[in-house]
Image (cartoon, rainbow, N blue to C red; front, side):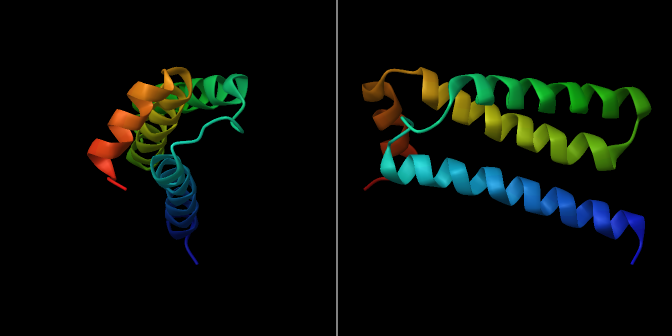
Length: 96
């Protein structure tokens, strides 16, 4: 198995895990169990990894980290916003 295949597999699994969390939040409208400091750090880490990939001009680093940055940032935004607004966004994306 090539190192690229391993990297792509890892990227796919990471993206899938964050997409699953977004979907769960949209379905349940609940973010109480999420630790805000963790999501701040996770979002920042993906931003830094994306910048690192850009500086190295390596798309296998840039693409998955940019996608995860957007997903983690969305989760963080949902966590920080008032419930009424979070529910309105969830209703627009995934109506009950």
